[in-house]
Length: 370
Ligand SMILES: [Zn+2]
Image (tube, rainbow, N blue to C red; front, top):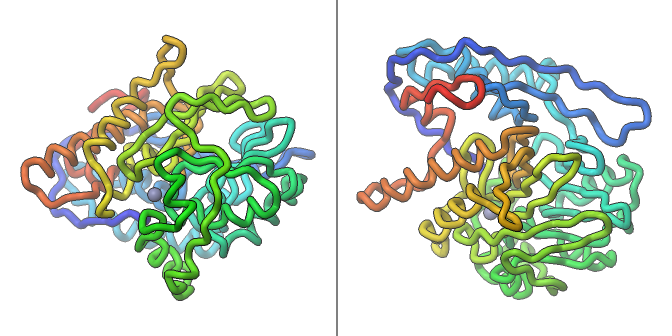
């Protein structure tokens, strides 16, 4: 699910916020588990742990002046990417700690995220990702001073292979596999919902040939089928499921409260600053997806409205605060896409920073200024 950058020609003449952002150097605490994240403050004052792509988007937004086209930021892109490759620009390194007991794992340099949650009575592994990355994932679990056998539950946000391919390996190690009802059958039968072109592009990025289709997916029994509103009590952790179909029939987000923060595990449904799910698959359902985002944006629990703080998406930048803003932005972007498609336009992707710049959106602290 890499983003597709379209080069548009015009930018509107509006001032941008002069608010700058800063990179805080990582600090390693004695005895702490995992790497400290490298935190960046966005032009609207939100603390995030960015990927290189988001870092470049933010820097481009901050550097361009009114009247300049987004494409004039290409030299910034090249310079920062070179700095990153050469090790002069330090961004996050897996495994890194979001908060006590919640860690982000993954293949270094990739933006496919696996989460590890310590329940006090075993670990939850969320979206274990591709088989080819499991040696790294396992090494990171050891690095965090856990054992792979501590993983009691594997929780899937959806069936796509980039999130789910390795789940059968974790089941063999003894973990219970849990997935949204609508994605359970695809995972158990490896039908066409699980496999997609996504894996080809991801493997091409790391220079590996795509495997034959028969090697891609290993069927895995699903031990628990999750429905909307299910409450999962796993050790000391309570997760609330939110069915969010559209990207796949069984796409599911999970909410938990931890350290007085409202945490949303969002898979591909709502990502940083309005990034949205890849919807070019034939079974994708835009109307369902839009309805799911409306529900997520207005999520209530026991009659109380929840405003999300921390966003743990399946890909990309992690919001340490103001996650609700990203959910609301994704709703705005998808609403726009649905309207443009209804008007006959062939469009299925918006690159949000670029799009906002081109529209003349001004980012200002505390989310105002639009
Ligand atoms: Zn997906």
